[in-house]
View 1 (spheres, one colour):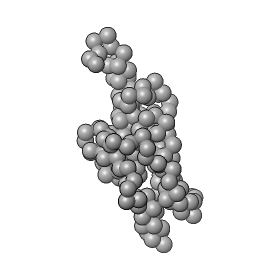
View 2 (cartoon, rainbow, N blue to C red):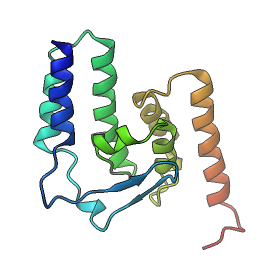
View 3 (cartoon, rainbow, N blue to C red):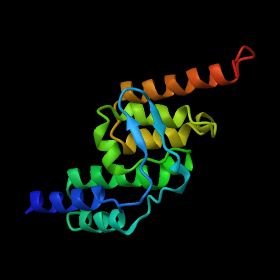
Length: 152
């Protein structure tokens, strides 16, 4: 039964309208490219339907992890300047790549340390070492961005 519902959730999360803007995420490159990235609608009814399906099993750790990912991708990351669809997230092997996209986004998201750490946790980076790596990446971006030698 849980596998059937996972398939249903995946179907909701991967369905795109024929003319909808698509962001292409290149795994390993840490970049997002799209001519219409700002028009992407992450709050589509399909995603919220998937969220409602997840509510059928509120005590499951797997369901909690999926709900956290949806929250990160539809609410937290767009506030930090990164728009990515759940299916595109699935194509990226390391959630740290998504966090690095937010850290290096032109919106100056590296100033929002607590929000970035929360996003990292929602994406599954919870160990002390993983959080330390996020903090290190934030510090590195702050040092490079605020450097008087910054190349523009």
